[in-house]
Every structure is written in C-alpha cells, then in structure tokens.
Length: 164
Image (cartoon, rainbow, N blue to C red; front, side, top):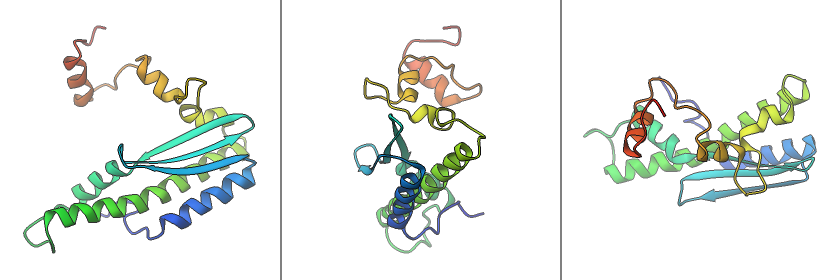
C-alpha cells in the first residue's frame, strides 16, 4: 500500500494554490514559513479579523514514509541518504496535504456545512500569540485519548495519573 501524497512533486505549486484559494476566499493576509527547528510547515492568514496559523509536521510525514519504505540492505545508498530522501519528500507532500485540507475547510464554509470558527477553531490565534489548540493543550482541557499508550507514558512521567 502506498502512502498518500508520496508521489507529490511540487510543494511550491501547492503553496501558490493555497494563496490563490485564500485570496479568493477573502483573506487579507497570507504567508508561509518553514520551521526547521520543529520540523513544521506553517501557513498563516487573516480572514475578517481572525488570524489563523495552520501547522503541519513534515518530520511526522517523513517518519510515516520511513515506516512505509524501511531501509534494508537492498536499499540504494546509505541509511542517512534514505532518511534525507524521506525528509525531502515530506517537505513536498505536506504542502499538498495542507492545500487539500484548507481547500476542504474553505469549501465546507462556503457551502454552509461549517462556520469559519468551526472549520479553523484549533488554528485561530489568540491575543497571547498561541493558537486555541495550543492553549487547550497547555491548560490540559481535554483528557488524553483512551488507549493511547504514549499519552499514558507522558502522564506517568509528569506525576499525573488517570484519576487527575
């Protein structure tokens, strides 16, 4: 089985499509940024006074690509080269993923399926400079998903338990 978007070839074109889509939608500002420190692509825009920051992890995509295409003795090049290939493809693929996600959200808004706030709630910027999702995570307003071993490990490490 292939990984979605693993054959994407033009990240720049996808970002330009996002810009055109958001401009047509009525956004007053638009920009993109690559955060190499955190391994993320950020798309920022403003719509009717609401600032939005959408983040997508290209390191996360690269890890998924490597699970789908593990390095073996038969792989050409070194393991480091294989990992660089995964990261390069991830940087391209994440642009297409964000384009399609934003396009879907805008379509849902335009057709009345969702409000702007409903479509982009987690990505709306607060006066503090954090997104609403970041604030919710910081304040631990949502319980960890059931059956998520990573969440349970994190809870154990910071001294909390299931009954908190």
